[in-house]
Image (cartoon, rainbow, N blue to C red; front, top):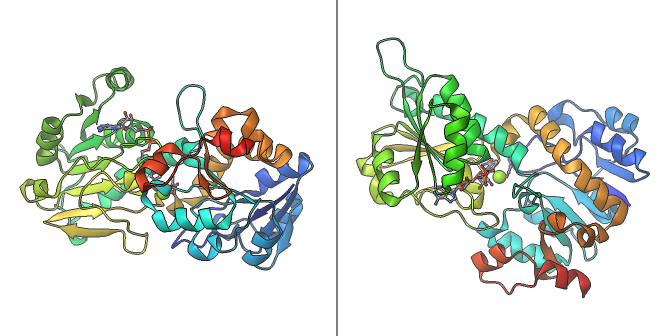
Length: 371
Ligand SMILES: NC(=O)C1=CN([C@@H]2O[C@H](COP(=O)(O)OP(=O)(O)OC[C@H]3O[C@@H](n4cnc5c(N)ncnc54)[C@H](O)[C@@H]3O)[C@@H](O)[C@H]2O)C=CC1
Ligand SMILES: CC(=O)C(=O)O
Ligand SMILES: [Mg+2]
């Protein structure tokens, strides 16, 4: 198969779909790889590094989209990329369609088979291609909170960990999955007071064990969220209902009752966000203020640390990408976990949560692939 890697074009997105090390694995598996010139610049990988790994460099993104059987990216295709996708082509990348009707419509129109990293599953009920970026985003969330809490950034002027004799910040984390756990590790490490809220009792038990009493855990109810939100200096939004729009757990009417200069980091923004007042922002202008509360809602947080993120992402995507490159769509027939990644196939929505979120007709992936 001819596998193509365009340069990412989303604002301040410096990750790359395949690292040179990953290209070498594809080439060793007797696949051909083309890479747009400069695609690896954000991680310091030159065209020469890609050529050494066995790729051919092409001059324009249009060359990648017109030639490749499978396009491997990081972020959801932007409108000009969607317009270049074609029937029979495989797109392998993050999509986050539930909160993005225009992209869903463009992918349906293209006729391509779009496989979303974030809905590929594993045998333990996890999301193996989302997890590495959730690890990164969870850790970055606390860095973003530290910066946003500074006075000149509009925050309360609070040092996260405090100093002897002065209390640390109170950090509330809604959703104790991968993002929430990694945010908690950072927040605990800095000496903050952390509460994690989740609606899975099993997860709360695991977190209690993992942190050995250094975090408080609370079951997710409207009451608990309101009580913790009003006391918090920082709230990290990290809930996920796989494939679906995030539930709005903090309503606008709570904001005037929160501390002035408190900070909301809505990591779940790529699924629409879990705060009623969230809207996507970019690394250029990451924050805005509503009712005295600072909102940070960057939808591609790991793009800020592309070197760490590209390698971490490639380690997770590589086995699935290789299966697709060597077997084509048959890889989806063979592997139900990879098949769960298929969101759009030849003009059909094959992800139930996406179809429900956007009120589209749904066709199960197994049926659509057999048609
Ligand atoms: N903005 C960005 O750059 C990035 C965003 N993300 C997003 O972060 C979000 C979280 O991802 P993960 O941690 O990997 O998901 P996860 O599936 O590991 O964890 C989600 C947690 O939310 C909990 N949850 C669901 N509904 C809840 C509710 N009503 N109240 C409390 N908890 C609830 C679940 O029980 C689960 O423990 C996703 O939307 C993901 O796409 C991930 C990476 C980067
Ligand atoms: C998960 C995701 O959307 C990202 O890494 O940008
Ligand atoms: Mg995202």
